[in-house]
Length: 174
Image 1 (tube, rainbow, N blue to C red):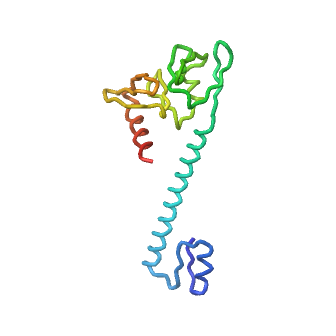
Image 2: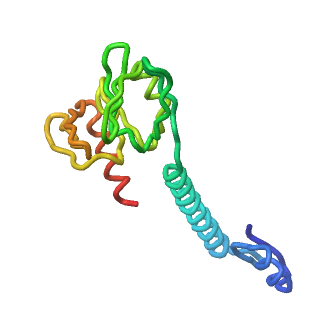
Image 3: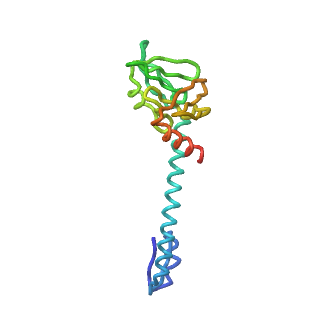
């Protein structure tokens, strides 16, 4: 908010209202441009704060248990997303690789992908979805491949390589 008035007696009240600037009449071009710059800076500052808050909320949600229901031959398994290292297509089934074991479920990889958080999981290949938190190393190559904490080595599709690297580099810059 920018106050424009002929009376300087309102300045204290304007700043109590969180005014960005206070311009006395007659308004000069320089004063107006300076006020616009201040407003732009305030908007940028708030946008950055909003993004930071969103990142904190997403991280805090990830730290809470977020179980998903997975239908298997024995019944329905409830698995915490954080425990999933990667998911692998196997025809009309999907093999879920957990940290210590693997389970086969009666859902396609596309159906599983819809259940998983897009913030933490990424489809690196037509037959593989990985948990971005479980990557130990990315190895260069045509598409390259990733090494996960459970020892798995998974090829990255050359068409997904740039997007994966962009996600990984942006994740590490925060």
